[in-house]
View 1 (cartoon, protein in one colour):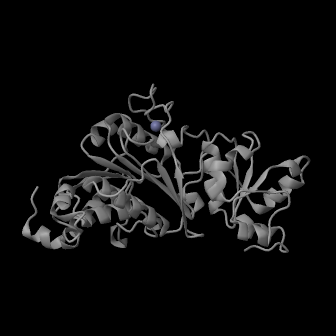
View 2 (cartoon, protein in one colour):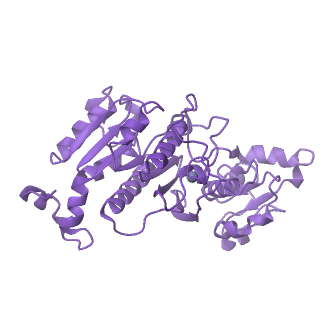
View 3 (cartoon, rainbow, N blue to C red):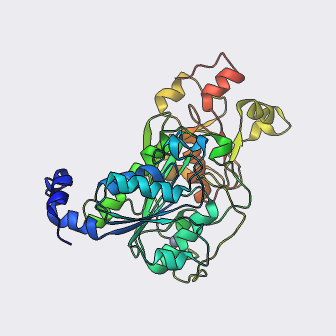
Length: 376
Ligand SMILES: [Zn+2]
């Protein structure tokens, strides 16, 4: 896979990096990457991987472009409304970089086709908004030993992690069970348009690192991003020996697909309360005993907090989870609801049942319930 003269010019800024150089660029040229979901996450990932010279890019999506997609799905133009995303995306990427090969998979990933499609690629990027597809993708990647970069977004918050076969945990290790209920998706809950741009670009970064063998992959680490607080938080996560797919005695050894679990994000199992609903809950008989956990920093806590709340800054939570009884259904609180959502996820993974997020945080509490409380 040697580089042509025009490729050497095109990728000159990569060639100038000693960590990548011609050898790394040739690895990129030889690489085959599948992007599942040509939406908010897949758009920036596909554009950057195409621009970076990733030699074969697969774009898998069964949807057509809608006007409401264009607020964040930067792979598409207004002129291409109603076209299949996979085809329109292929055309856009080919125009960006004619040196690469782009394969459009205008279909839905199912348990019957997943293995055959994924086997054609070296690495997979998860940009889907369907929970069932997310688990299917994870399971097939584990079974076929393909690295998987997985990201999810919700409102103003997102998360990303990388599965490296034989090294770190898989998505199912971190989020063991598919949820029973349905969680609001982007269409219902809304999403900040630029948010998937950040997470999709992180996914592309991970892909380039894995292909060229530079840096340290996001394996064994779950990175969360809170756009409102402009805060990245990292959680160390380990492989679970009892994981259903990558564990010592796996029970999932072939692709499975739970059709009907159509929605997703990172917050399955987490309850949500508005400020007024929390006020009513606390006022109800026995409600005052409900455990409130404020995960803000000490300086924010000192300015003002809810009476009786337990104070555990988010960064200390992994070490202090023992202070939260597993059956206490704690309500996590922060300034605007982002850090507390991360706390809910952390508690859920640690076995705490029904962690609850105060939506909008102390700012919502001050606006809707108690204007006398100070919020830093
Ligand atoms: Zn696992």
